[in-house]
Length: 164
Image (tube, rainbow, N blue to C red; front, side, top):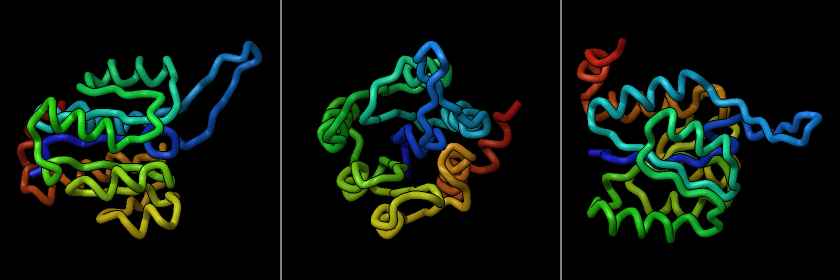
């Protein structure tokens, strides 16, 4: 049973674009449907976290809005964070899912129980993934992964009862 879903950000929770305004401030586009599924999956006992290679105040704000439990930014070796999370939570690797889109996600994907990828992920990521979304990163791929997990574990009806 999956108890924790960890996510990459750029190319997974976002479309992978880095936008800058005239003032140089970075902008990112998050998909509200991904956020909706994250919020309601937490109500049935699934925790969430972010492990990303870049640092962004926007990511921190979005993760806090969604009440994600773990936020790790500026991480070059994501498997080290996974080991730390396992130590903190006592979860087994089989109880953790991860969704990522690019080569820096490959090592952590090999270490978790369930691996997901957006439709536009790198070939090597898709070859490693147990689930490949029909949607691109930032366009509802995370929601599709969450729904796949919930349905696979026969928790869909419980999930729907919490939706408002």
